[in-house]
Length: 306
Image (tube, rainbow, N blue to C red; front, side):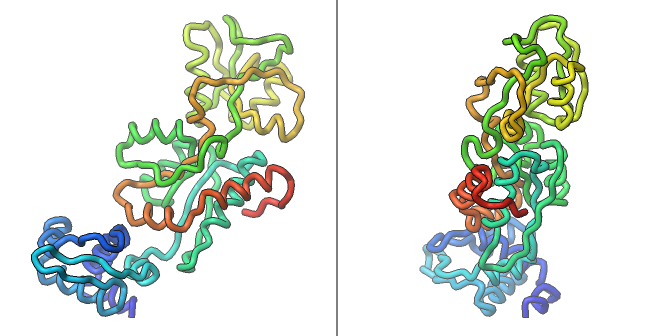
């Protein structure tokens, strides 16, 4: 039946209006036919037919209150999702090179299991901008980035917004400045400082702490930085401390506390215009589930699975 609806003459209108009903809460007033027509530039008869179709397939139930308008008193999310042609969810997050990221990936996969039987998959990519660009071009539905990166790209793109926040320390425990010299406490003139242009957080913090200091920047991939510090090819770099702690690496570092934990917080971001996806992800993802599984993985109590 759903395929018949989507392939019908009014299929596009029915699909479009079904997405609107996903966003409407039970008990809320629904837009009038005229408002739907103005919003989507559909003919009046087409809108009326689309709403009737959604009612007939039991995706929604409306209650008319005369001059007060119509109100949504029941909705079947499974049917609305099918009519909306939302049949999969694809997200992206950083490469799981630390236990914290392994735990985050494991927690998200479990939390994204849903009663609507929508299959979910995750892609793992370096660089917040690369992940967000895939969301902007609609290759992926959402991206996991730090709150610091999200703030930057919301201002840059305008069409990006935060779907869900997972709280402090869900992304990293802390960023630190690592030094080759065991006695160093700060970056000084003449140092060679590692920088990864693809990592917005690392690049932003590096430029901030080196402002006004005469340093030489050495372009590196994030995963190379610790090795380059240890062998002396660079003198210092900003890094996520999780990998050092995971592997018990003996290296000198000083904690950075200049970003009010924005850099430690994982958020999911998506396209503003896809509000139906925001509603769906907020409904199916339980933050406590994600964080509990992340902690169990970091504590070694369960094996990561993603």
